[in-house]
Amino acid sequence: MNVRSGECELSGDITAVIFGVDGVVIDSARTSAGAWKTVFDPFLRTYAASHETAFVPFDVRTDFLRYTHGKPRLAGARDFLASRDICLPYDDLRGLMIRHEEFFLGEVHRHGVSPFASTVTLIREAHRRGIRTAAVCTQRHGTEVLRNAGVVGMFDIVLDGLRAPGTRLPFCPDTALFVRAALQLGTEPRHTAVIEESPAALTAAKRGGFGLVVGVDRLGGGRLREHGADVVVTDLSELHIGRRRHAAYA
Image 1 (cartoon, rainbow, N blue to C red):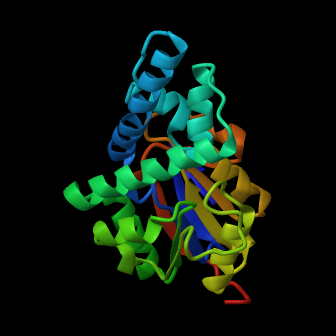
Image 2 (image 1 turned 120 degrees about the vertical axis):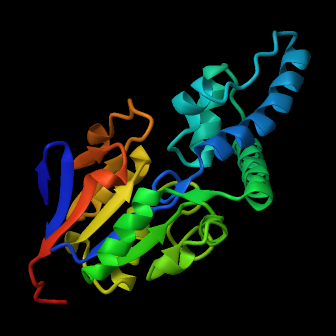
């Protein structure tokens, strides 16, 4: 890895790249925020009425960025409700998470989602240089969303919450998910880069000994280096493919 002028270059012995789906490949923040509002507002209204408190709706910018963005759904729901001094049992939190996924996918099917152009460019450049690619997602909808965006075929493999049994999915990013992706790509973690926006996913990748861990902080303020990112970019146009050295195992 080389870092210069605020940019990062994949070079040396990196022979594969693992991309997160939401926020890295797919521009899904607005759709996700809207789905959270659809889920939370009826719940908050009912809760306020039963507890004789004021109804304060979910804010699609402030609340989304502070509590749910870049987190597994279960953790996002828990953290947002905790900010309102609401504590729910696991089954109720899981119910909110499932409803969010349903609303999210409904919006995807009705209006579609788009990939980030810079990510598509990087994937194409990786393949031109002989670097294999995977897309991973802790949610069950990963493959479906990539297919809707027209980019599922760009990856050598795709793993999501339906395709990765034994990795604690879909609730929390797990080192085993990234390791499994690397093995299916025919490489080793130390020769693989991971690109993610989720702090928990970055921590998991760092724990797995991956050769390069890149944090994507499109909206700013993520402090992703504190969670294991070797380098942080605001867009994948800042990430380039350099000259590779031949890896003995390749």
